[in-house]
Amino acid sequence: MTKGPRDKRMTIDEVVATLEDGITLGIGGWGPRRKPMALVRAILRSDLKDLTLVSWGGADVGLLVRAGKVRKLVYAFVSLDSVPLEPNFQKARQEGTIPEVVELDEGMFQTGLHAAAQRLPFLPTRAGLGSDVLVNNPWIRTVTSPYADGQELVAVPALEFDVALVHLNRADRHGNATYLGPDPYFDDLFCLAAKRAYVSCEQIVDTAGLTVDTPVQRLLISRMMVDGVVETPNGAHFTTCTPDYERDERFQRAYAAAAGGTDDEWAAFEERFLAGDEAAYQAAVTAFAEEAAR
Image (cartoon, rainbow, N blue to C red; front, side):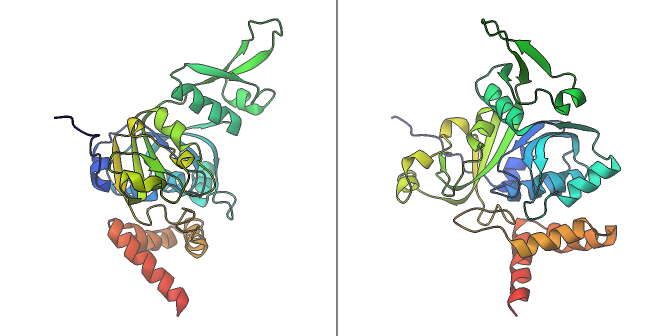
């Protein structure tokens, strides 16, 4: 009898249980947009440490850095958009608590993802030429074109991950996943650049349902890229997951105020929102929203 594609459904905790200290972890999404925050919160609750974190960063970076779980950070920016600089990240940079930091030009970051996705050691680009990126990262080399133009180009090393985490709107139980919002945010490259990739999603649907109300071109992630899929409703909160929901600006303001405040203010935020499991987080978020409606 011929078997169909494997059922890759997992729980949040089962995904985190596959992770190990010291791994290189790529987190998809873009700043405060469609981040796999339920998985990030589970990592926050875990004993994982010494992570190399690679991200177009938002609160994912801020939370894990504040918790002391990051040994090395590779990033192009760390922003919440309406809060230009993620405050937990800002605090860590100002206090020098991230042991190793690599800041790349956004074009270089993308080029590194493409190199890893294509299983190449590097790819050339003009991005970064003449900038302090090369001054601050002297290990990044340049190459000369072997053709008649003889141009000098930056040889961006592949951004390879042990594990990638991404969040999309819909997925099936095999790991095929689609985005419904305006931008794919390079999540497919994150999955291709990793040895293992896990997708969280707002809803797991039948495979045929992935293209019922959206073009097939939005089927961004193939099951061949994915090792596990997790249904996490509201799992990108407080980042966007358009069109399912937009960024929770009121919550983000509370987060930013606590992160930029005193240690006691941050401890109170943690106690209210981050001390329990994902169900407790979602219940606390619901209560927070209900307070505003009174």
